Length: 355
Image 1 (tube, rainbow, N blue to C red):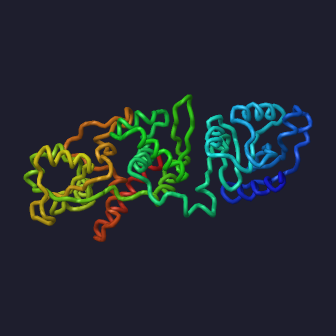
Image 2 (cartoon, helix red, strand yellow; image 1 turned 90 degrees about the vertical axis):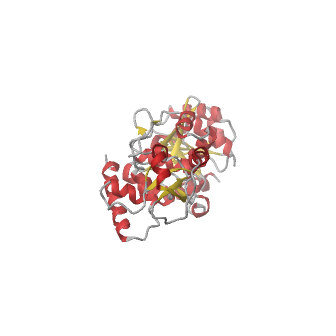
Image 3 (cartoon, one colour; image 1 turned 135 degrees about the vertical axis):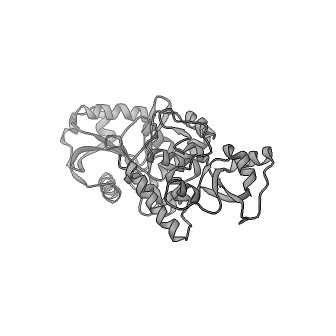
């Protein structure tokens, strides 16, 4: 059964990660304490050209706690010059989390591969059989915001989930769910620093954009119209320029007939009631389109976001939505002028993605 487990691991790693080869039994196992000789079997291997040692659990499931396993791995590591990987046929999700908390390199063939020495955490959603079923189709609003922050170079791995929740105006639970989405999607991993979870992205710049793009969606929830007079009266509170108005501000298009602005759906609900704003029929000559977004557009805009303090600021009425959200918001446009401007917009953002 042990040799079969090792072979399954070999196939799994070669399928989902990189070159892996079993190189034979570990002769120095006889020098280990008896309890480590009886509970495990050991095989040497090469992972992407690096020598490593497999510590194969003899039982079908994890027998010891993560803290005890960490001690066992530590003893074995004194006899082997290279990373030691604990391999088990099955373990519970709770125990897998404890293994990660202890930063123990481990593998459950076909289920999970956690190699902190290689900055790699592959989970069930990465297996070829389950990928189409388990991998999220689209990211939620907060998870998308976090990805965009990372693409803009504004993501701080040291900040807590609570601090991020306060800055985005959501609950800590919502941020935790977003973290889970990003981990499940393979875009990031969680690391523990004391009792604080840190979200670390597995890629950056263009590579992160390529991985995340299929999971990103237009931030627009719906679009309503208001009278231009009402807009002029409350322009400072009505978010940022969006759509073709934003492209015009960037010099990519002529100014459109109707101005477009964006704010969060939540803000619109309260502003509409507080200011007595009235929705108008679409297409009025003097109407202003208000895009109601799934998240606050001000938080990501260049004028509404301080990249050093990661804190939202007051924005004047001349601000525009961030470039990547603007790109995503125009995904359904059929006007050739807008489609060309949209691609030019992405090229402009690409300069920063290469920094």
